[in-house]
Image (cartoon, rainbow, N blue to C red; front, side):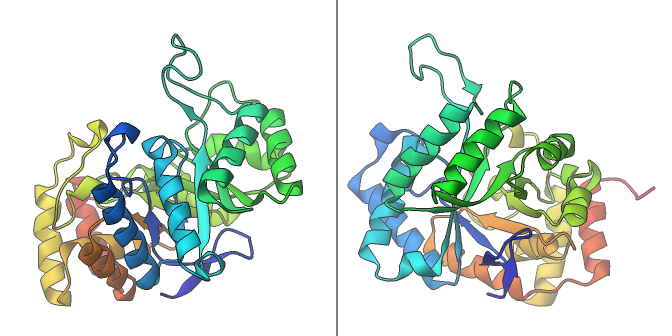
Amino acid sequence: MKLVPIGRTQLETGRLAYGCWRIAGSWDPAAVTPESEAAGRRAILTAYESGYTLFDHADIYCGGRAESLFGQVLRDVPGMRNRILIATKCGIRLPGDPTPDAPHRYDFSADHIVRSCEASLKRLGVDTIDLYQLHRPDLLADPEEITIAFMKLRYAGKVREFGVSNFRPSLVDVLLKTCPMRIHVNQVEISLARLDALTDGTLDQCIAEQITPMAWSPLAGGLLGDGARQLLPSQQRYQMAPVLTVLDAIARQWGASRGNVALAWLLKHPAGIIPIVGSTQPERIQAAARAASLDLSRDEWYQLLNAARGEPLP
């Protein structure tokens, strides 16, 4: 894949990233089996061999088992660590952590950010995380606390660059103005099923500030693809029939899959969106990589936008 810079950093990545949230085969660590781990290993290796260079994690993915599995692959594949970038996220605390009565919450306290990073480093078996992201906005976040944590991690050589995930533009502005460690990524849900980032200022800000937008669930949990679906509760309401009709028509013209056209639609945007491919099926991982070679016309892009909007442009 063609390499592009991440934000204003010296880091470069292919146009598609590989998302590791499913590689352990379950959200429940107790449900992980040797078979599911073997399937996850095949998925990682397929992505690596297909040219994906940015691998996206979070500490909550299967309670850390996804990071541990990835770390095992890194140890087994000579030279792999030097050819890829590792991203991971922190800040989501599940119910019962650390006491039985603790609620589900978000935590950007300095201590939690640092502890989480050190735990991820240990599970991944690496000395440095290339891109460390705050996962979901903590309404009690203190920019000074975040700055303390980021500076500590940077000066200890544990993190190279920083980003955020699911942040609205005003929250990104706060960190840009208060934190000396620049934010280089905002990872949000963007797809033909979820257009908010095009209209709420997120992508405008990314262009203005040279922040790289990473698109999670770029195929809307599989609704825009050709295979199995794994929908989040928020995606159950998505109505894709009009979009699929246009996707299929354009896909036939290109001799491509509908999923690849949906990914190419994201790649067309001037903000430099990096879609995160999350399938664990080797053939789909390989096929998705070919989306980077599709350059939709402006007419095709707007045909898809109009279908996704479900109403004429103003």
